[in-house]
Image 1 (cartoon, rainbow, N blue to C red):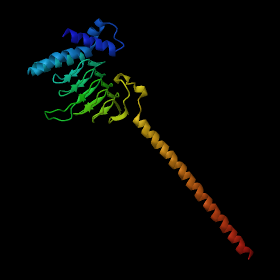
Image 2: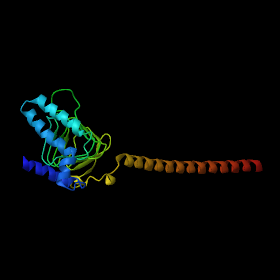
Image 3: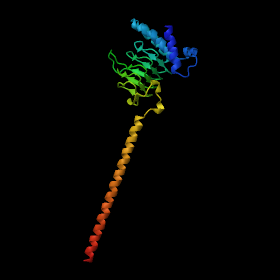
Length: 233
């Protein structure tokens, strides 16, 4: 148990540059507190003491602002940074070394009692405000951009942005390389293509108009020449 606690503290110190001392981490990180509450609640849940597990998770939600269902399975080196508003559903499965930011939702899409929440692989990063819905799989090393809504599975090493979420890059390297300022913008790219196509069409229309004007001028000159010839006769 103490080895696991030390690992949790070390994970926070590695993933959050604002963490300066182990005592600060223990006292001032609600994401860490929620994880420790969840471990006990999950143990109770697995031993069929489900009401106690739910009550403990409800207390954790009240104290930390993070809602972790006691049925969710969470791996090692898990960290929720600035975790207010994070929601993790009952059948969620999370691998090792996963990082979630504020407002992330791992939600379900059906009322049936079956696997209905996401499965996150190892080394996944989910940006602030992202929503992942349904029994989808997020591959190892994938990155989900802030504010994205993901409803389809994501391949390993991919980066997803947008609503609905679209894969914009694959194999960018370590999951911690999620730098939003450097991510492609699919909406901006689509607008750029539309504007480029519109410019091309405008140029073609201008050429057609010029061609028609030249033809009209030529016909006018020929008609004037014919009229002059008839007048001379």
